[in-house]
Amino acid sequence: MLILGIDTSCDDTSASVVEDGAAVLSNIISNQTEIHRKYGGIVPELASRRHIEMIWPVVGEALTTAGLRPEDLDGIAVCKGPGLIGSLLIGCSFAKAVCYAKAKPLIAVNHLEGHIFAAFLEVPRPEFPFLALIVSGGHTSLYKVEGFSRYEELGRTRDDAAGEAYDKVSKLLGLGYPGGPVINKLAREGNPKAIDFPRAYLPESFDFSFSGLKTAVLNYVKQQSGSRDQSAEKTGDRPGNSSFILHPSSLPDIAASFQASVVDVLVRKTEWAIKKKWIKKVVLSGGVAANSELRRRMKEMAEERRVELFVPSLLLCTDNAAMIAAAGYHHLMAGNIAGLDLNPQAYLPL
Ligand code: KG4
Ligand code: ZN
Image (tube, rainbow, N blue to C red; front, side, top):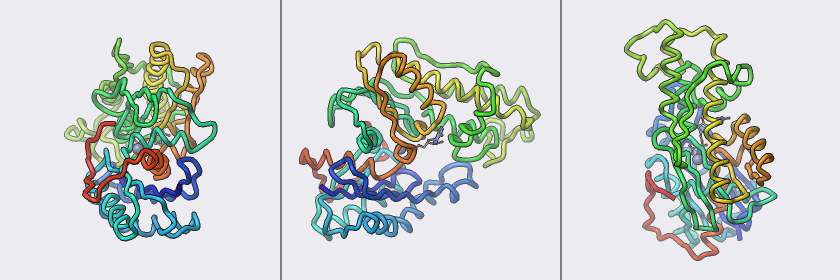
């Protein structure tokens, strides 16, 4: 079964061909980072416009790389949400048009389901049941996955997602967008114990909360620095340029201490779920799963607890269409075909 996957949920235009939900024949990603960088975050309108420009070439390249024509496909899987509505519309409209023109089945995939199924694109593949921690710019959710389409959400963030916290703290420190990779890199030179930032463990709950941590970083930075512009203090809203005057030598310690707080919570909650739910397999996916410290600490915990850990390679952790095609394959096998009246949804729980 050859499935073309399409993902335009946020700021990456991606198309991929996957065979039988497992073998990636192509995975093309056109990144918009340079467009949004100067604004310090994603500008939805610009993202939609760029998707319109890139969708044809990206899909074309995905087919060419796989050595296929549209006629060879068994179905087209598209991300229907959650995400930015304008961005999602481009991918969905495109997929609907191709399905109509070429008489192919249209398959609608939830973006979060895609992140879970990224783990099936590499060997060894997880067997059900497993726990899945999806950590991205928009989500931080812990699922118990009992089978295809059998997802139980154990917990989710009550405020900011982990990736959002990285991006906001990065902006606050004047490190630019996207924040995750830059804080990850800077943290390697810092002391994670230098500053005791809070950890919101939310006892007896699998939920997460990262907004208090973000405020703690803001307060710390305010204390340590002279402010350039009082009006911008609250949001640090100068793209790529902090409102605070910090000595550059203090940045690695702030980055490392902030990251330690995020990673501690993610690892401890997952560990708690392993104990409570008696599940010995864990999938870690989503953009923040590209974080080297999170990968290291989760691996350490998994070894201690004798748990099997599945973490997709970096390119499959961040947004990509191969994961959409992988999940799409299972929908097609189950006969879940979407109508051509499919509408994307910005808010779409799994
Ligand atoms: O899954 P993803 O590509 O898009 C969403 O679905 O949101 O995740 C993007 C998020 C961004 O917030 C980005 O800062 C974060 O993942 N991220 C990282 C790293 N690489 C990307 N966060 C921490 N460390 C990284 N190395
Ligand atoms: Zn994502």
